[in-house]
Amino acid sequence: MPTTTISIDLYCESAKSPRSSYRLFVDGELLTERNWIWPTYETYIKENIEVNVGPGEHTVKVDRCWPDCKFGFKNVYVNNQLINNSSKLVQELTFTV
Image (tube, rainbow, N blue to C red):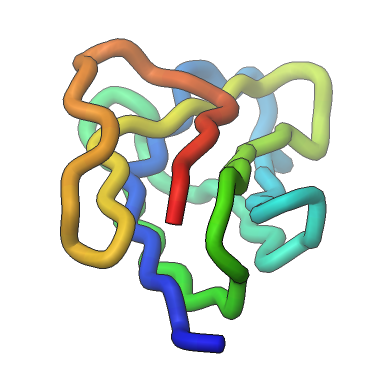
């Protein structure tokens, strides 16, 4: 099974405590959990993900670890092809390989 590369720009929309953190999933499988330590108004993280998935529909999702923060992403690329060019942040997106 070939490797699929996914790139997203991940933003923290709001954080009311210093313990803000998020989890990133593909098809329900946890890929990473990170703490957010940067100012929310000027910073985003470019997450570069490599997964082994078969042909078909798949889902990438970000979830907050604490209720007092909110995360979202945009500028989603799958295998270097832009699949979401909306300026609106989303928490979940389905893509096809």
